[in-house]
Length: 212
Image (cartoon, rainbow, N blue to C red; front, side, top):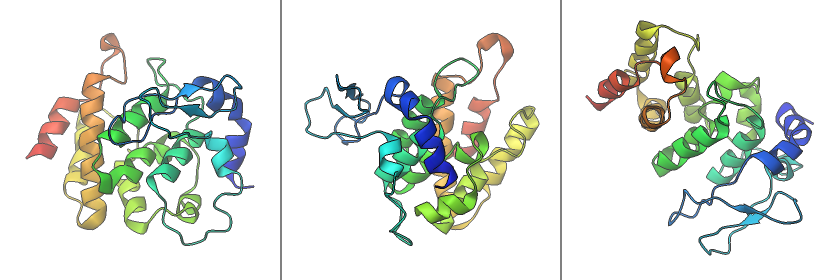
């Protein structure tokens, strides 16, 4: 069993009890699934669609082992993110997966996989090899590297240097990283990572750089 599958199995109860699943139907991406009374991690969308989703751990168990080389779908990227970030909290106490979910749905469709996975390299120990094995493309992996800060507790200039590196990146990876970083910064402005009295990175200045 690889690291992601093991983590998903270990945190299955956290996934079931603590992490709501957002409906991925385009008409109402911000809706949350209600948990089934059986507590099995599945649910139905309160907006009335017929879509149901199983827990991330259920998805991981044996799902990818016999599919080498198959590109990752957005639903699969979502399940991977929910498994990898199960139980992780931001400094404010909010579940990290809530931020990841908002960024993913705010990212354009071509960048949605990267939106779901944009915190994995920074917040977890999931190796890059497992992401590739799961179906992440080379450009997507390069975009995830661009989005990962080398020092998470950077000062203001270090953070802006990180954003400038994304701004100057070429090719498909650069386009993916910029699209997701815009969504990330817009979400951080609305939902700051730190409490106001402890300070936050210069999100507004960073977003202005990407807008130029």
